[in-house]
Length: 392
Image 1: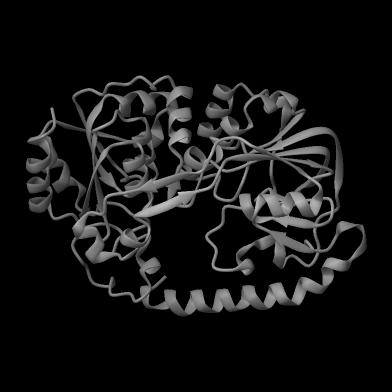
Image 2: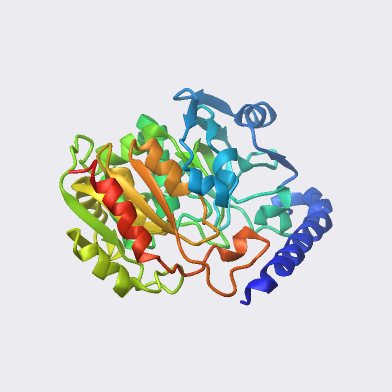
C-alpha cells in the first residue's frame, strides 16, 4: 500500500470499528450466550467482583526504567514517554463457568463479562476488540473439567509468544497440574518446541480458532508475562531457565541477525552491511531457521548482536548481561520493544537509524512500521568502533 494512503485508511478502519461496536451492542441481550459480551472489564479485581471469580496474586508489581538514547529521543518522543513504566502484579483468575471464544482466545465470565486484561491488543478504545464487533458468537460447547487459557492475540508472532504468552505458564505455576485442558496455539514449530519444554501433553491442547467457543467447569486465567513493549524481568528469568541459559556468562561471538528471507523490514543494502561487519568478525545468522534451543544457546554466547528490528532480536533475552545490541531501525523508528527488552535483560542498547528514502515522509509514524532499512555503513562502522572499545 502507498504510504500516503495509510493515514486515511486507518481512520476509516477505526471509524468502521466504532460504528460496528455500537451497532452490535444491543445484541448482548440475546439468550443462550449468542450475542457479544454484555460488559467489559480490564481490571482483574473488578472482573473478580463482577463474576465471583477467585483472584490469586502471584508476584508484586514492578517499576521499569530505561535509559533513553539521545538520538532516539529526537526521532520518536515515545522513548521519553515510555522511559518509565509500571507493570502491575501477576495473578491467576479462577473462574467457575468461564468461557474462551475465538482465535484471540477471548475470556468471558459466566455473566457475559469480557476480560480485556489478557486480550493483548494494540488498543485506543474498546472498539479494538474484535469480539465486541461480532453480532453473534459461535454456539457454546461445554467441556467438562478445568481449563487453562495460555493464548492471546499475536501469539503466532515469535516476539509476542516468547515475551507475553509463554511466560504465562510461569504465572500458572503448580496450577497447571489442575488443568485437564490447555487452550493454546501450537501450529508453529517454535510453539510446539516451547510447549514440549513446559511439559504439556499435546492431548490436553485445545487450539484457538475462529469458531471456538468453549465453556469449562473451571477456567484458570494467568496474567500476561508483560504488556506491549514491556516485559517483566521474571518473565526473562523464566525463559532463560526454561532453555537452560540462566547462568550464561556470555562469550565472544559477534552476531548479525538477518531478515533477508522476509518480505518486509529487510536491510536493503545487506551485502554492503555484511562486508562492513566481516572485518569485525561478525557471523550472519537466520534465527528463524533454527530450533529455539539453538537460538537460545547461540545468543547466550554473544558479546555483540547487530540486526534490523524484527522477531529474531527477541532472542536477546537469552544474552548475558552487558551484551551489546545494535538495533537497525527505519529513519522514523519502529516500536520500542527491543529497546525495553534489552534494558530489562541488562544489556547495552545502541539504536542506529537508517537513511531516509523517498516515500517515508509519513505523518503517521505507524505508516513506516514495515518499511525496509537502508543502513549508513560508515555510521555503523563508527558505532561499532565505539562499542567494541568496551567489549571483549
